[in-house]
Amino acid sequence: MKRIILIVVMLVLGGVLTACIYDDADLAFETPSGQFQPSIPIDVVEDLFGQVQAIWDADDGNLWGFHLQAPLMIADPITRHALTNMPDAYGDFQPIGGIYGGVLPNHVFISHTITDFAGLTWGMMAWEPMIIDMISDHGDDVVRLLIHEAFHVLQNEMVVGDWPMEVDQTFAFLSHSADARVTVLMEAQALAHAVQSEGEERFNAIHDALSIRAHRRTISPEAAISENAQEILEGLSIFTEILTFDNANELMEAYLPRVTGGAQSTGLSVYPYFTGAMYAILLKETGADRQTGITFYTDLAAILQEHLSIEITPFEQLDTETWNYSEIAEAQHAWVLEFQRMMAQAEDFVAQEWLLIPGDNFIDGASFEALEVLFVDNPDGWDYFVQYGTFSMIFSDWILHISDGFSSPSWYPNVGVHVMLYENIQISEDGLTATAPTWTIEVTNPAYQIQIDNYGKLIITQN
Image 1 (spheres, one colour):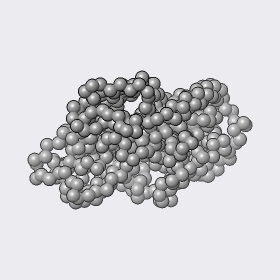
Image 2 (cartoon, helix red, strand yellow; image 1 turned 135 degrees about the vertical axis):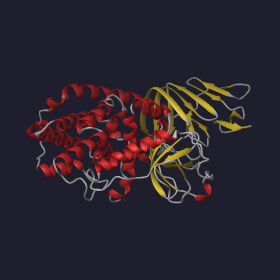
Image 3 (cartoon, helix red, strand yellow; image 1 turned 30 degrees about the vertical axis):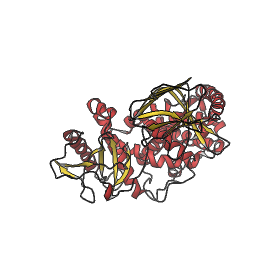
Image 4 (cartoon, helix red, strand yellow; image 1 turned 180 degrees about the vertical axis):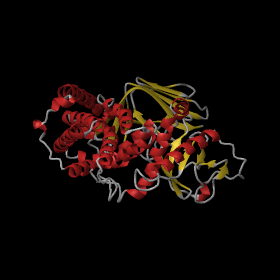
């Protein structure tokens, strides 16, 4: 159930790992070579693919023991035009210059992800405003993203076994245990220091990181499987981005702020991306085996511990102030108390009636300000996430403006969005706007109107 929560949250926030099954009958592209005019600039994509290929060729299999070469796709989520670095297995995409192009069918989800299409698994990047801006200012970041998604494709062959179903991708324990949050931030600091140092200083930092990690898994046993799986899935992909940096320090400096930046939010759950990459760097630099028999259960830290013959020290015997224990602990205990207050408010929030808005497309775009995401376990068996703040969800036919609270169950069939059903709903005479104390729905397509059905649910219907 926790994994389903993450899927919904990532849909709302704009990213999700998904796989789609190719159906030849759904293919929308059918035109001779040379007549296709993609919405994505061909020369820019050719250059990006060329940079990735040059990095792969320069590595020549050194990083992972095999040559990095994977299908890549850049797709426009609006036009569904797509450009690829190689032909698909069925010959549906046509040559355009030195690359290939076509139109994706509607069932293929477009995001920064991997997807199955036309007989191949592709590393996909969405052609969106953020990426367009990055190409102008930070082109290397776009190349890193492509290498990251390409490695996810290669992981299908490299990692042995299936994804563990017991993984909690939300790392819910972090929202209730200040001590667990403290150890996450301390371990990250120790690993960063280890990557930046050498000799005895590095050994001591690794020792402390491993000891801090062991303590967290004592106070939060559920952390182990979730951390291991995410460190393999995402941490190793981040580690592979090292090919675009000059050294490990630069990769560390790029990703450590993402962990420290989550110290006062539920965003701290990104830490396995960082810890997995750091342990992989240390395994590589100390000559340990990080390639043989890898599964999603593999503990990279345990491999490093065995390789260096490190004995774990009990947490209370560590010099914890080396890693700023007092300062971190004070802030994290305060955060958890505030979170518990908000959780109580959230539990009352989701106990109300629901407003169900059916929709074919979950979300076309979204803008968020001061948004906090909470996770609530509800007695009726549903898991919910609750978002506090002010934001808008922009759909193709309507816009939803929210202030002070928006909540949704983790999954509900055939429904686009759930928001709380408040009393005193006001619907305009033309049926294009509905308002309540904390939200407003505006229909932007006159072909639709807002109604309340016999069950008291607000719905958007087509005229």
